[in-house]
Amino acid sequence: MIPHQTQQKTPLRAAASLLLALLTMLFATACGTTPKNNTTPAPKPQPKTEKITYPAQSMRSFGYSNDARGSRKAAKDLKDSGDFTDAYATKNGDVIIITTEKQRQTNIKKNNEWIANGERTFRKSNPDYHYQINQDGTQMTIWVDNNLTPVAGSSILTVVPPGYGYNYYLKGHTGPWDMTITVRNCHTDQLIHQYQLSQGWKFDAATFGG
Image (cartoon, rainbow, N blue to C red; front, side, top):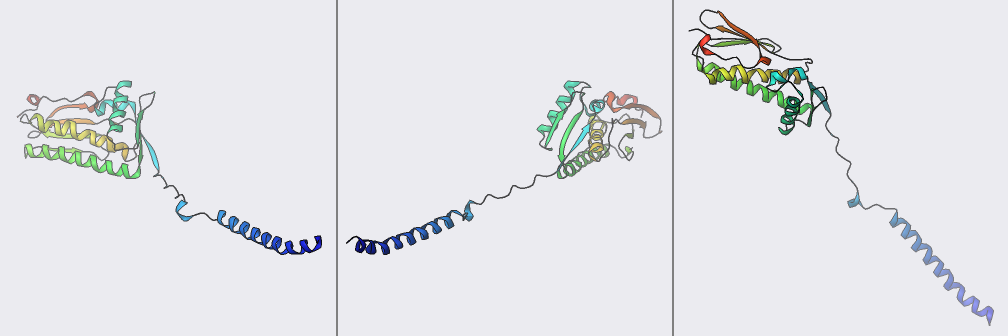
């Protein structure tokens, strides 16, 4: 009887072994396949950035005090503007901005618009008034008389110069920046006075002559 029982169980064992082998193959195939909806997208490349330095010696030309506090304030204002990736002050008082090429070009355009607005205000104040600025934005001569109003005076003497200064660095220049401002009488061409922007706004229309 024993040999007879063995012969009956053999086909069942063979079928069970075959089924187990098939299940193993199916399981292995399923585990080896990654569902498409679980694929992690590749991270987008970050825009390339560069550092631009505003030297500590130039802080007064931009209206900030020439000390560590002035540099920190300048850096904070630049960072809070949202115009750049980052901005911070160094231990020696330099202000560093981190900018992409797109941000750099956008801010050059923004500063040009700021300059243009100041120039329009100045030009509209008197047809005899005019000005001249050298190519790198470090020297400006204006021709006015004692009818120059504070609004027109501030637009050409305090609004326009910093716009050139910011663009000076955004366009690749390095080293300290300042602007020499020369005031002349628009009727006689007489020299009224000359000063550096870093010395502060020098406005006294009474001295300009009629």
